[in-house]
Length: 326
Image 1 (cartoon, rainbow, N blue to C red):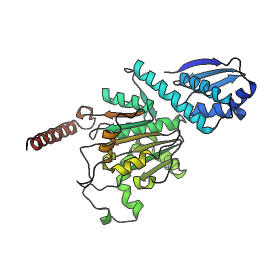
Image 2 (cartoon, rainbow, N blue to C red):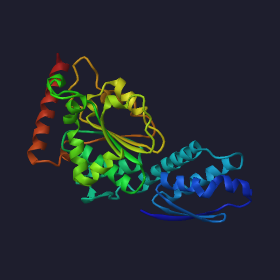
Image 3 (cartoon, rainbow, N blue to C red):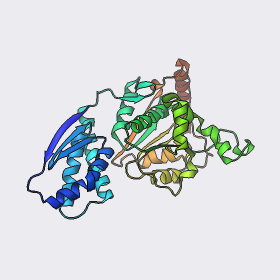
Image 4 (cartoon, rainbow, N blue to C red):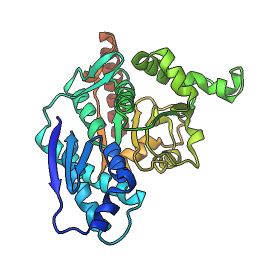
C-alpha cells in the first residue's frame, strides 16, 4: 500500500541541511532507491511517497542528527535505511497479515495459491534474508525468482545473482563431457527456466550479457561481497555448514537474499551435515532472518506430486519412530 507523508525540519543549521541532502540531492536519491520511495523537497520541506514512506521519513530524521555533527557517508545512509525499513516491516507484519501481495512480471501478476505461499511472498517483500524450506513443487524457487524480477523492474536492486551448489544426485560430474562451466550447467537449468518464463528469453540473454543477471555455482561466491543485488541460493540442503556460512557472509548493503531447499532431499554424503539444516538450528532466533516452512499441502504441481510427497513423509516418520524404539 502506498503512503504519502511529509517532514519539515525546524531550528536546523543550513550546513546540516546541505550535508543531509548531499550535492544535487544525491543522498536523497540514494535513500529513495534503497527504500523504493519517491522523495521530493522544497527547501526544508520533504514529501515521501511509496510503501515505505514512513521508513524513509524516519531514516531522514536519524540522518539529520548525524548531519548536524559531520558529513554523511554512504554507510550512514545504508544503515539508516536498513534500520528504518526493518522497523517499518515489523509494523507491517503486525497490522497487515491478511493482505494479499503480488509480484509483477512479464507474465503478469504472480500471487500465492495457498495461505503459506501468500505468507512467503509477504516475507520476501518485507525481509532482507528469507529461508524457504519445504518439499518440491511448493513454489519456493519460482516465487523467489519472481520477487527478484519484480525488484529489478522497480529498480530496487541492480542485479540478480542465482546460485546453486553443484552436488550430484547420484551421478558423478567427472563423467559429464565438457569443461567446468558445461559440467555445472545442468544443475543451474531450473533457474534458467524460471527466468525465461518470467522475463522472456531475449531479455534474460541481454541482461546476462551485461552482467546484470548472473547464474553461478556456489563455489564461485567465495571472496566476493554482493551489494545492491538480489541473491537466491537454491537447493541449499546440499550445502555444507561452511558453505552456508560463506554464502551468508557475502551479503552487502542493499542486497536481499533468499535461501531455498528441501531437507528431505539431501544429496550430501551421510557423514556431512547439511548447511541448511545447520542454519535452521543455529539461526532461527537471529533477529532479521525469516524462516518460512512449506508442507505437502502447498504443492502446486500435478495432484499426484502431493500424494507422493505425503507418502515419503509418512514412510520417513515411521522409520524415525522405529529407530527411536530401538
